[in-house]
Length: 167
Image (cartoon, rainbow, N blue to C red):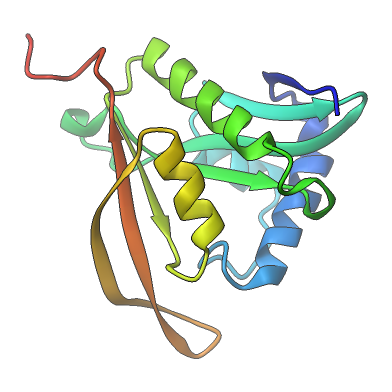
């Protein structure tokens, strides 16, 4: 499969939304239970970088960042969202997207990326580890999804390029 990782465009939204819905359906991708509209999603995610994986004209995955805080001291810290279409999983698309997201985030000045992943989502944990993330802890019974208490594994990646105490 020929793959291009590109900047997400507004017209990609319907594909991004469809792939997000597939992730919601698994029950192991997110605490979200509702599908956002464009305005909500756009407001919650950092403008740059936002990426899509495109095979021909088809979007087969996407990745974006959310700020972890509005406080200025955390301006270089963001939470990763990455989703791959069901039919395209296991083809290396997630790794290509995450590597590009890491590189673009560093260019944008981010020094720490984090991900909260359900422990049952072993593929996502391994994907993040393969791109330089490490498990920093387990948050037990952190939230309720569909009436069930869920844990998350907290992973982070520190950039060697920025945010290492230099001023």
